[in-house]
Image 1 (cartoon, rainbow, N blue to C red):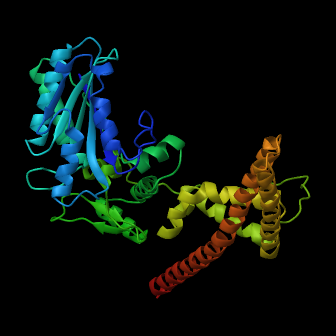
Image 2: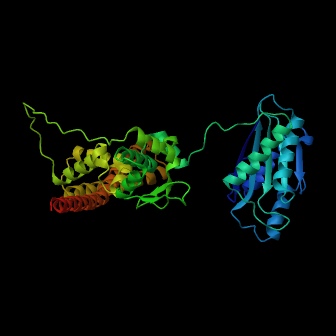
Image 3: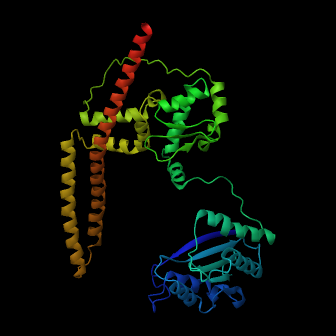
Length: 431
């Protein structure tokens, strides 16, 4: 079994670890020297240079880049690491697989250095090659498809030819943004679409009703005889999202089955009231705080309220945590108006300026040789970090409050227009 990964060698300077005598050695030179480290390979026979000299590999690669006028490109080369399971291969076999990987992958177009390191319990190959082809000067393409079909695909094929095991993917890959959101428990755009689809299914009698309900919610729908996969797009989204990509329960057959299994839409529960015998006297909220509280109610309300809101407001659910933190900040600091918020921000700005100047004086004193100032400087830094975070929170509240008012105004206008349409329909039917 071989595990592979690729590292892009960019044109940054190395930090002189082991190369203090020559500060102009780039990471490409570092990678070549590391791959040919005799303390790790232990034997010369585990080093192979393809299309270049073993001792002049770096010079040959740079000469190729200069010949084709690409010495100033950011990407200088690539560093592929191929690791094997401990005890599964011999050094000779591991090196043979590494050389085969370089020959099949690069096809005689790039200068390559292949070295097998034996200093670990798991044998591993280092394949360092130039980013510029010495044949036609073309740059090596580095994409996900090139990795899975090129580097990983060739490596797995060579392992199978030598009777080694390969790594089988356990589950389908997900986008990085979706993975990070799931990891931290945040709501994603697909979660919002999935919830709207569930609500449309509950309110539909047939698949045609389901598509009409999605359009009524504000989605653009691609469906029909000439469309292979049904897809939807929110007004503020750039791309369509296929319904079958939301999960096994969201392809067309599954949605039709769910509609058939529950033909009657779920009616919202009737509102109940509870009388409080001893009301608690609390200070009433200001308009500024009530604005946030009502907006949080709309975003976190049950599904019988969510489906009636606009698509833009439904997407605001992704920012629910941020709005909750802003509301708590307003309540904790007793900020009731925009003027108080501005005063709070200006006061923190003045305090940050004063602390920054005091810390600057301590830095100057420390440069003059005064000792024992590290603790004071650290205290100023910690206080500045807290103030900057709160100052940024105040700026975000000022910006978000304006957008919240606009969203609520648009929501009220939508409710008024829908109510007028229903009343007009009732009058038409009564005639």
